[in-house]
Length: 267
Image 1 (spheres, rainbow, N blue to C red):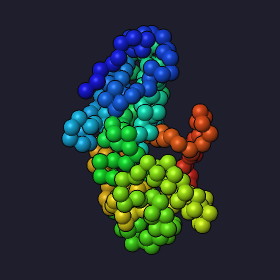
Image 2: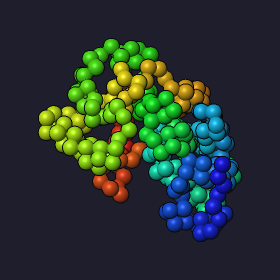
Image 3: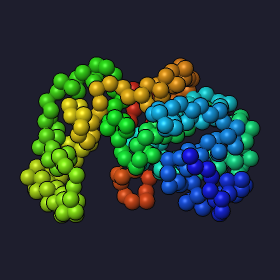
Image 4: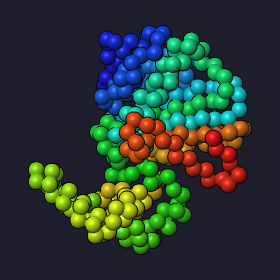
């Protein structure tokens, strides 16, 4: 729906561009940049429609000559995808400026997954087309059952129901005064840690509420897991980088590391 914009952001250039050139104002602009640059470096491009209407997850594969695998994903939280897309586009264009355009790369194979949640990215919302927070959806069937069976107010989510889930569209007063009055009252009553815990943990019982993790694996992850399955026996180190925004000091990168295997090493 959008093409690359002409002007100072010339992606045919062999020089690094201003940082703003790698960021976009819409999902379709971001997608156009990503696919253009992936093609320019000779990457394999795999496009998967997530939602009807040209909402796609695009995967660029840079085959490496060595062992290991690096997976880089953007837009699990849709609106946060503009940062992840910008990083992916900047890296791909850096390869172009270095003359790495043959499709053969040193080091591990790299998979750049653009827009895990394309619908949310396109509509500037955190959640996907089913009001599901994908960052809380990557669970096994057993884990979903466990989450659905737990106490609905285990992490105090129901205590903040009126704050999190208004029952009608906000008025001007609600948006600029009422919400903050409710927020301060809730924090004074339950503490800031209580609010943060309810937000971070999410919930699995109210499909119409925010931070809803769903009842089963969403199409985005079904597509992604299916694509990644052939890489299950990859030799060497497997590294997954998932880009989010909103936490940590402004303008600084924070690396939050998690490894499910006790013996795994992280750097």
